[in-house]
Image (cartoon, rainbow, N blue to C red; front, side):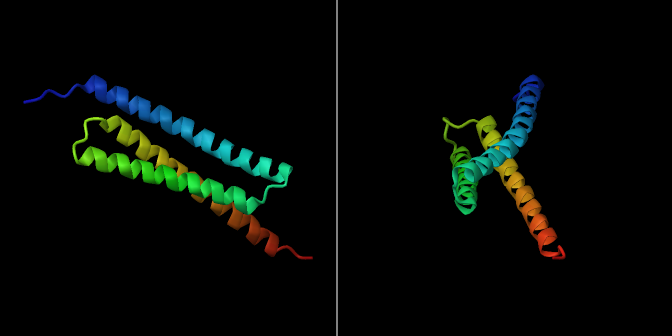
Length: 115
């Protein structure tokens, strides 16, 4: 029987928690910076949004590829790599959904304003 090293599990869990907190703050900042650069340089907001959505899609694809490699037994992919990539993709998707919700709310507020 193989003994489970709880120290390694705790270290991986701590690393994942750290990555989650860094990703949450950096994704919001990165999206806001992209939007701000777009506004100041004349870049179309739709293009900035499309670029962000493409990066979200790439992160989702990368996480899925790692999961598939790990599932087939590829030794070059570790469980922690798979978990971290999955969490990054999940957090990025959640941030994007929150930004979308804020945009829809702002649009709704503007449309309900009396002129």
